Picture 1 (cartoon, rainbow, N blue to C red):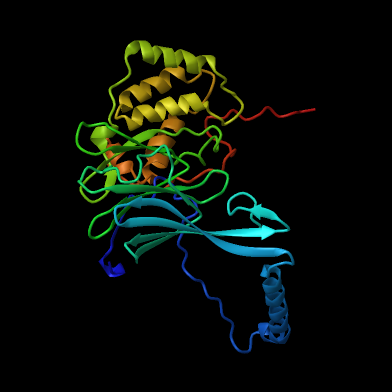
Picture 2: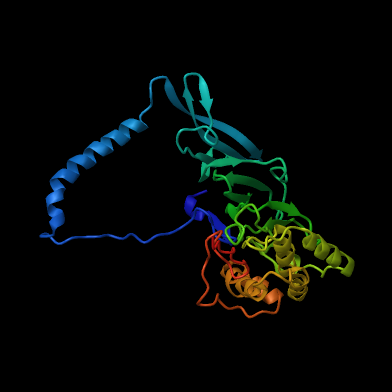
Amino acid sequence: MAAAAQRRIIASASIGRQKGIAFHDKVIASTKPDAPMRRYVPIAIPALVVLTGAFLMSCASRPGERTEIEREEIAVVGDYRFVTEQTVIYEDGVEYDNIYKSPMRLETILVIYKGEQEIHREEGWRIEIEDRHPKPGTDVTGDGSPDVIITDYSGGAHCCFTYYIFELREPLNIISIYTGDGSFSFDELDGRPGLEVVTTDDFYTEWINGYVGAPFPHFMWRYNGSTYEPDPDLTRQQPLKEAEFQRLVQQVRDGEWPASESYLPREFLSVTLELIYGGNLVQALDFIQATWPAQKPGQAEFVAELLQCRMRDNAIWPMLAEMNGLPVEKARSDCRDREIGEHKPWAIPAAKDDG
């Protein structure tokens, strides 16, 4: 199949921040011919040549080191073959894989063949088929064609995962779902042919608590005939029953609420966001009211920052706003992202030492 005939569908490329993905305009600074900078040019050019040479020498293989490309056939479905090409460095008899011990960033390439013809290439960092997903050839989308699910991990402490669903049909259909550090799984949710996708949103990992104390609310995706997209009907949940609501309230009340810090308990944020993501804003506000300590200031400011600022920058805000009867508007003009650990309105300033 010609590459031009392939059709690539990218499903809601980012949930939240899209860690590691950014586009920047090129900024070119220039000086006039008679600017003082001119006298540094004779020095700068040789210096640049020396630095470039040193860099190239550092990239060259050291004695005893060799680089190989290892090819592995990871899936075969009918006439389709999925092959990975992985760069591996060997040095003094020690194998360094391209994830954990490599002295440089080395990519993995996924190559898809139909018969003997290469029909697609996908570059990534760690590309693999996970056993937890439906096996290759399963009709995941329910459209009658076999599918193959591929995971690409970018490397890094808290980032990032992209999941590819290759629909083996003419033309090849490629669906990608980027979850950052959020989870991804398939489930049967609506009784229709095919499976739905369940993900968690990592949008809040750089807000208030940082990663360790961040909430990861769930939302669901449905296949629409060509791609997966977030679905409000699947994401909507029934309100908590009174007994469960009171149990969670008591659990959060019994937890630690540092009065002198801007940290908020992860359980408090998790329940609040799960309720809002389930379309239960009224119950979420009741939960905040029932759990927020009387001696801690800033409850109203927290609600305003959450609903009028932070959530409105989320890619799925239009869906969440509709589910909760809120206007679909952009964040307020005075909103800004506070640095983690920066003073929040709900933090009591530490007492000054007059001594």
